[in-house]
Image 1 (cartoon, rainbow, N blue to C red):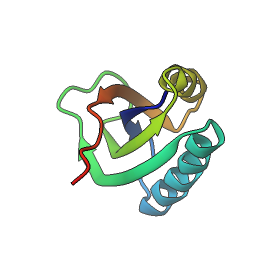
Image 2: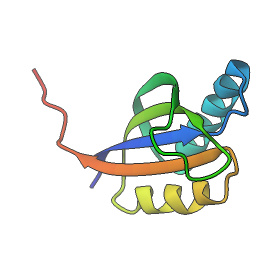
Image 3: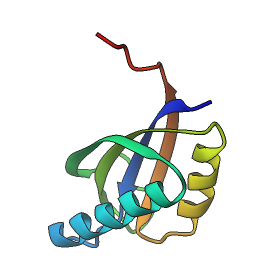
Length: 100
């Protein structure tokens, strides 16, 4: 049984737009390797944080909408936790896509 999910990732791009594009392409490959079927990738540009907790004051936001097995978000979260280019990550289960 597959579910529909949303993954909001905040990337540490070290200030360059080109690196964001490369990171997103790599992450898309990682999602597919783990068995995700990507429905949509929303690039939301670089934004300043309202509350700075460390040396990073802004991040590049990207949203992945994908389908996969119920254990997939946990696997991705564990894998991306070790990635230095991902500053924050949040996963949410979505309602099934409505068929017209």
